[in-house]
Image (cartoon, rainbow, N blue to C red; front, side, top):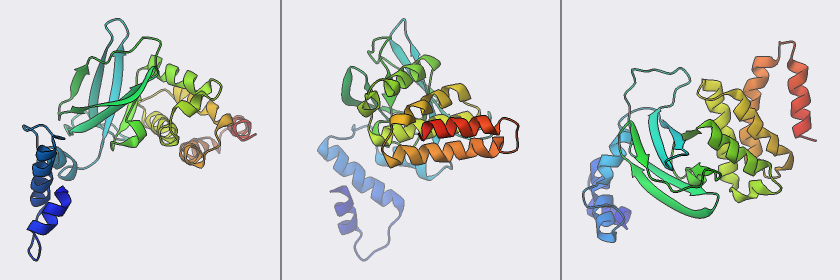
Length: 232
Protein backbone atom coordinates (compact mmCIF):
# COMPACT_ATOMS: atom_id res chain seq x y z
CA UNK A 1 0.00 0.00 0.00
CA UNK A 2 2.83 2.38 0.83
CA UNK A 3 4.49 1.69 -2.50
CA UNK A 4 1.20 2.33 -4.34
CA UNK A 5 0.80 5.65 -2.51
CA UNK A 6 4.37 6.58 -3.45
CA UNK A 7 3.86 5.81 -7.15
CA UNK A 8 0.55 7.68 -7.27
CA UNK A 9 1.96 10.75 -5.51
CA UNK A 10 5.03 10.99 -7.78
CA UNK A 11 3.34 10.12 -11.07
CA UNK A 12 4.89 12.03 -14.03
CA UNK A 13 7.36 13.74 -11.70
CA UNK A 14 10.80 13.11 -10.28
CA UNK A 15 11.51 11.52 -6.91
CA UNK A 16 14.30 10.74 -4.48
CA UNK A 17 14.61 7.91 -2.00
CA UNK A 18 13.29 10.01 0.92
CA UNK A 19 9.95 10.31 -0.92
CA UNK A 20 9.66 6.52 -0.90
CA UNK A 21 10.64 6.26 2.77
CA UNK A 22 8.01 8.89 3.67
CA UNK A 23 5.23 7.06 1.84
CA UNK A 24 6.17 3.76 3.47
CA UNK A 25 6.41 5.40 6.90
CA UNK A 26 2.98 7.02 6.62
CA UNK A 27 1.36 3.72 5.61
CA UNK A 28 3.23 1.78 8.33
CA UNK A 29 2.04 4.26 10.97
CA UNK A 30 -1.50 3.99 9.60
CA UNK A 31 -1.37 0.18 9.71
CA UNK A 32 0.29 0.13 13.13
CA UNK A 33 3.25 -1.89 11.89
CA UNK A 34 5.81 0.74 12.88
CA UNK A 35 5.95 2.74 16.11
CA UNK A 36 5.04 6.42 15.76
CA UNK A 37 8.50 7.54 16.91
CA UNK A 38 10.19 5.42 14.20
CA UNK A 39 10.51 6.10 10.48
CA UNK A 40 11.53 3.99 7.50
CA UNK A 41 14.14 6.64 6.62
CA UNK A 42 15.73 6.26 10.05
CA UNK A 43 16.08 2.54 9.44
CA UNK A 44 16.93 2.52 5.74
CA UNK A 45 19.56 5.26 5.81
CA UNK A 46 21.77 2.88 7.78
CA UNK A 47 21.52 0.38 4.89
CA UNK A 48 21.62 2.65 1.82
CA UNK A 49 24.11 5.31 2.91
CA UNK A 50 26.93 3.12 4.19
CA UNK A 51 28.77 0.12 2.79
CA UNK A 52 28.85 -3.46 3.97
CA UNK A 53 26.53 -5.42 6.24
CA UNK A 54 26.62 -6.47 9.91
CA UNK A 55 27.44 -9.57 11.87
CA UNK A 56 25.35 -10.13 15.01
CA UNK A 57 27.16 -11.91 17.84
CA UNK A 58 24.64 -13.60 20.13
CA UNK A 59 25.89 -14.30 23.64
CA UNK A 60 23.64 -16.04 26.15
CA UNK A 61 23.98 -15.77 29.93
CA UNK A 62 22.84 -19.21 31.03
CA UNK A 63 22.58 -18.16 34.69
CA UNK A 64 20.47 -15.00 34.34
CA UNK A 65 18.60 -16.17 31.22
CA UNK A 66 19.46 -12.99 29.32
CA UNK A 67 20.87 -12.65 25.82
CA UNK A 68 23.06 -9.92 24.35
CA UNK A 69 23.14 -8.96 20.68
CA UNK A 70 26.32 -7.22 19.59
CA UNK A 71 26.74 -5.80 16.08
CA UNK A 72 29.75 -4.84 13.98
CA UNK A 73 30.53 -4.67 10.29
CA UNK A 74 31.44 -8.07 8.85
CA UNK A 75 34.90 -8.00 7.32
CA UNK A 76 37.31 -10.77 6.35
CA UNK A 77 40.05 -8.48 7.64
CA UNK A 78 38.63 -7.06 10.85
CA UNK A 79 38.92 -3.29 11.32
CA UNK A 80 38.50 -2.13 14.91
CA UNK A 81 38.18 1.50 13.81
CA UNK A 82 35.07 0.84 11.69
CA UNK A 83 32.07 2.38 13.49
CA UNK A 84 29.29 1.32 11.08
CA UNK A 85 25.98 0.55 12.81
CA UNK A 86 22.60 -0.55 11.46
CA UNK A 87 18.96 -0.78 12.44
CA UNK A 88 18.52 -4.56 12.38
CA UNK A 89 15.34 -6.66 12.50
CA UNK A 90 16.11 -9.43 14.99
CA UNK A 91 13.91 -12.52 14.55
CA UNK A 92 14.35 -15.71 16.54
CA UNK A 93 12.89 -19.07 17.52
CA UNK A 94 13.82 -21.49 20.30
CA UNK A 95 13.70 -25.27 20.65
CA UNK A 96 10.48 -25.22 22.68
CA UNK A 97 8.87 -22.22 20.98
CA UNK A 98 8.91 -22.26 17.19
CA UNK A 99 6.65 -19.21 17.01
CA UNK A 100 8.72 -16.43 15.48
CA UNK A 101 9.45 -13.50 17.79
CA UNK A 102 10.99 -10.23 16.65
CA UNK A 103 12.39 -6.93 17.88
CA UNK A 104 14.38 -4.05 16.42
CA UNK A 105 18.03 -3.63 17.27
CA UNK A 106 18.66 0.09 17.01
CA UNK A 107 21.89 1.47 15.57
CA UNK A 108 23.76 0.70 18.79
CA UNK A 109 26.81 -1.52 19.34
CA UNK A 110 24.99 -3.83 21.76
CA UNK A 111 21.59 -4.51 23.32
CA UNK A 112 20.54 -6.95 26.04
CA UNK A 113 17.25 -8.81 25.59
CA UNK A 114 15.35 -10.84 28.15
CA UNK A 115 14.86 -13.90 25.95
CA UNK A 116 13.31 -16.61 28.14
CA UNK A 117 15.02 -19.89 27.19
CA UNK A 118 15.98 -22.97 29.14
CA UNK A 119 19.79 -23.37 29.31
CA UNK A 120 19.37 -26.70 27.48
CA UNK A 121 17.40 -25.19 24.58
CA UNK A 122 18.95 -23.76 21.41
CA UNK A 123 18.30 -20.25 20.10
CA UNK A 124 18.19 -19.57 16.36
CA UNK A 125 18.41 -15.96 15.14
CA UNK A 126 17.45 -14.53 11.72
CA UNK A 127 14.60 -16.89 10.92
CA UNK A 128 14.47 -17.80 7.20
CA UNK A 129 17.08 -15.09 6.53
CA UNK A 130 14.58 -12.26 6.96
CA UNK A 131 17.44 -9.87 7.73
CA UNK A 132 20.61 -9.16 5.73
CA UNK A 133 23.24 -10.06 8.34
CA UNK A 134 25.40 -12.91 9.54
CA UNK A 135 24.90 -14.51 12.96
CA UNK A 136 27.51 -15.85 15.37
CA UNK A 137 26.73 -17.51 18.71
CA UNK A 138 28.55 -18.41 21.89
CA UNK A 139 30.20 -21.85 21.81
CA UNK A 140 27.47 -23.51 23.89
CA UNK A 141 24.62 -22.39 21.65
CA UNK A 142 26.51 -23.53 18.53
CA UNK A 143 26.81 -26.90 20.26
CA UNK A 144 23.06 -27.05 20.98
CA UNK A 145 22.25 -26.20 17.34
CA UNK A 146 24.68 -28.88 16.14
CA UNK A 147 23.10 -31.48 18.46
CA UNK A 148 19.69 -30.66 16.99
CA UNK A 149 21.01 -31.07 13.45
CA UNK A 150 22.62 -34.42 14.30
CA UNK A 151 19.65 -35.93 16.15
CA UNK A 152 17.44 -38.28 14.12
CA UNK A 153 15.56 -36.09 11.62
CA UNK A 154 16.36 -33.18 13.97
CA UNK A 155 17.62 -31.02 11.13
CA UNK A 156 14.03 -30.88 9.82
CA UNK A 157 13.16 -28.59 12.77
CA UNK A 158 14.97 -25.90 10.78
CA UNK A 159 13.87 -24.68 7.36
CA UNK A 160 16.08 -25.41 4.37
CA UNK A 161 16.98 -21.70 4.30
CA UNK A 162 18.10 -21.71 7.92
CA UNK A 163 20.13 -24.90 7.48
CA UNK A 164 21.90 -23.21 4.56
CA UNK A 165 22.33 -20.07 6.66
CA UNK A 166 23.99 -21.93 9.55
CA UNK A 167 26.41 -23.62 7.16
CA UNK A 168 27.16 -20.42 5.24
CA UNK A 169 27.55 -18.28 8.36
CA UNK A 170 29.68 -20.73 10.32
CA UNK A 171 32.08 -21.51 7.45
CA UNK A 172 32.47 -17.85 6.50
CA UNK A 173 32.87 -16.79 10.13
CA UNK A 174 35.57 -19.42 10.54
CA UNK A 175 37.34 -18.26 7.37
CA UNK A 176 37.29 -14.68 8.66
CA UNK A 177 38.56 -15.62 12.12
CA UNK A 178 35.38 -14.98 14.11
CA UNK A 179 34.76 -18.67 14.87
CA UNK A 180 36.83 -21.78 15.54
CA UNK A 181 36.87 -24.09 12.51
CA UNK A 182 36.16 -27.05 14.80
CA UNK A 183 32.68 -25.63 15.49
CA UNK A 184 31.98 -24.98 11.80
CA UNK A 185 33.16 -28.41 10.64
CA UNK A 186 31.29 -30.21 13.45
CA UNK A 187 28.13 -28.58 12.12
CA UNK A 188 28.77 -29.89 8.59
CA UNK A 189 28.73 -33.52 9.79
CA UNK A 190 24.92 -33.53 9.71
CA UNK A 191 25.10 -33.29 5.89
CA UNK A 192 25.19 -37.10 5.59
CA UNK A 193 21.39 -36.89 6.08
CA UNK A 194 20.74 -33.71 4.06
CA UNK A 195 18.70 -34.17 0.88
CA UNK A 196 17.99 -30.54 -0.05
CA UNK A 197 20.23 -28.84 -2.61
CA UNK A 198 20.24 -25.38 -0.96
CA UNK A 199 22.20 -26.34 2.19
CA UNK A 200 24.54 -28.42 0.06
CA UNK A 201 25.32 -25.43 -2.17
CA UNK A 202 26.16 -23.34 0.90
CA UNK A 203 28.37 -26.12 2.22
CA UNK A 204 30.21 -26.60 -1.08
CA UNK A 205 31.08 -22.90 -1.29
CA UNK A 206 32.58 -22.91 2.20
CA UNK A 207 34.31 -26.26 1.79
CA UNK A 208 35.78 -25.20 -1.57
CA UNK A 209 37.68 -22.48 0.29
CA UNK A 210 39.09 -25.09 2.69
CA UNK A 211 40.05 -27.27 -0.25
CA UNK A 212 42.01 -24.40 -1.78
CA UNK A 213 43.91 -24.04 1.50
CA UNK A 214 44.63 -27.78 1.75
CA UNK A 215 45.23 -28.75 -1.88
CA UNK A 216 49.04 -28.44 -1.71
CA UNK A 217 49.39 -29.71 1.86
CA UNK A 218 50.27 -33.14 3.18
CA UNK A 219 46.83 -33.40 4.80
CA UNK A 220 44.81 -33.03 1.60
CA UNK A 221 43.97 -36.76 1.62
CA UNK A 222 42.32 -36.31 5.02
CA UNK A 223 40.07 -33.58 3.61
CA UNK A 224 39.17 -35.75 0.61
CA UNK A 225 38.32 -38.62 2.95
CA UNK A 226 36.10 -36.34 5.03
CA UNK A 227 34.31 -35.00 1.95
CA UNK A 228 33.69 -38.51 0.61
CA UNK A 229 32.27 -39.55 4.00
CA UNK A 230 29.72 -36.70 3.76
CA UNK A 231 28.76 -37.71 0.22
CA UNK A 232 28.40 -41.45 0.83
